[in-house]
Length: 375
Image (cartoon, rainbow, N blue to C red):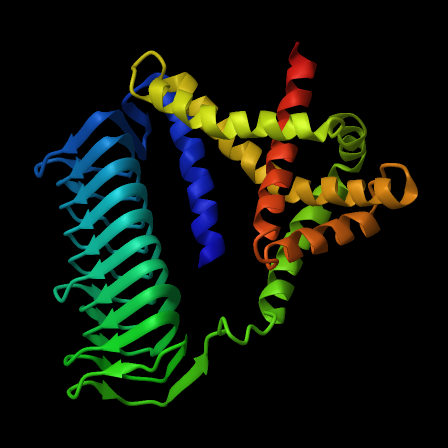
């Protein structure tokens, strides 16, 4: 589900980038694109295919016979969607039936009607009201989840607080500081949870399966998270080695010319991280600058995606320079660089600043090389 989620986000941004070149118009027979400060579709309107929107506020009251994919600050859905939803925004409210999956990245998400498929949310708060029914699983990673509706699948996720006061047929598998079952909770399978505190269960809550609790890693007795490190390392290693095998010669040239004066590259990367979102935001609010802003957004996101695995190559080359007195890009040094970069995430205090500096320096190196090529 997560891989499909990320794939849809990339495709969504790409479609917005291409179609917004020509403003607001039906991009093809089955796709409609709307952009602007405020985008609104009335109750009487029917969108025959997929609908893409970009704006500060998007309100959809009509029916959509395809996908609904939106990038906006505030998104309100009052009309039925016959396929999937993908939304990246600030506040998202879904008050109509969705016949496919719902995937949202947002600060505050409210679902008040039925969803036939799965729900995947990455954000600050997820609220599923008692009027909602979810046909599949609920996957949530964020701050707080309040689930009062009925879930036919599982509830899976990682959050600070999870409260369930409805029926969950597929069971619960969460990591949370606080897990609470309300009076109307009816869990049809096992509950597996990782938490530093016990499950809070109301007297009326019904649990058909077993309750299995694993203690969260305590600050007083911190065991090293070997499984988390192994998973993170293998995923990062796969991405980095794929990059290495396909682009070995360009990577060697990048290392030999791009990471000299790495301190300067860190400053360049820092400037890019700070200034680029500001410039893009200014461009996106103007009609003339929207196309340039979308291109800038796409290039910026692409640069970050590339910099994450590339920083492993850079760190491996730095290690080779330290030990062998020369930069080297090979499978061995790429693997060692990947391992140490992942270890940085588990080192208190110093690990994260070093990781961020390495990422900024890699991004700055990319920008420097692009500048030298086009100068």
